[in-house]
Length: 300
Image (tube, rainbow, N blue to C red; front, side, top):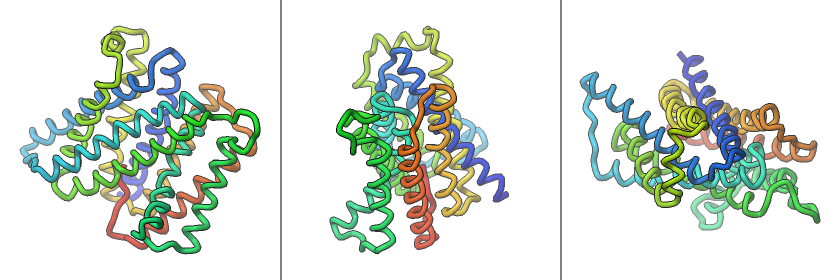
């Protein structure tokens, strides 16, 4: 049971990594990051609606209340920000760099907690933050006099995608206390879709279903917001928080491999070292946090 649950979490992380690569592929074909994010959220909403329908056919009640609605809407804002900023970061750099920057966001949450006094800094946490900062410098190439491997907009967008991801996690955990995960995800994706519909070119959006790239949009939505979330939610029920924290690292690694094998994006040795520093430090912090708070589970 534990093995099956962990396998589902790993499958979800792999799908999210592939989604980043598919987004990059679609952007190379001329589609805007906001439009790709919109269709990812919309297809995710469709998948969650089907999940809710199956639950209802099984005779189970679907309770909705104002607390669930509020926190799910906040989670939806995180969804919209995460999807959009992530794809913008990819367009300004590479899949591997954008995915790793997004993965580093929990460290900046720690840093903000230190600054406002919500959490006490420790030597281990400060050391991990220093490692992440060093890794970002090496990964993005901002220490060079000439242009780096990613633009300033790409760096900022990558970090904002991670902060949006953190907002989603925070709100989704609270929403889970007031209702089932499928209900919370449905509201979150509906919110994200409504936010993104205001940012896209509507005429271009309507051409997606009849375009030559329709299959890739559907695949991106299924892997990035449909099947992946189902695998993750079901898998978490039998997975320890420490295990979930470790296997989450599969996502940026999968994204990097997709960029290397499919898109031909190369990382030099310095970038690889930076990536390892970030992934190692963030994973270590996640494990430390899971052990200190065994009652809390990691949620995506």
